[in-house]
Amino acid sequence: MKKLQMELANQRMRKYELKAPNLTIEQMQSIHDDIIKQMDNLMEAYQNG
Image 1 (cartoon, rainbow, N blue to C red):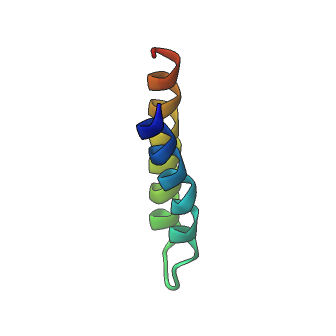
Image 2 (image 1 turned 135 degrees about the horizontal axis):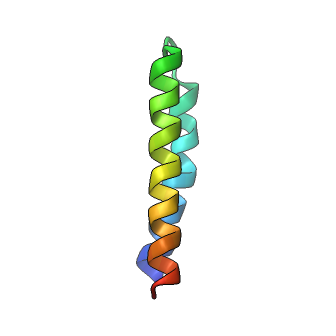
């Protein structure tokens, strides 16, 4: 459980990657999609105990 909480916190902090200067729309979309995918994986891991 503690590991899942740490991973969740890490993913929440990744939103700051989107504020990096000179990112293209494609790079921003890729970062966004990866964050969402990782959050979904964490949710599934949490639900499966």
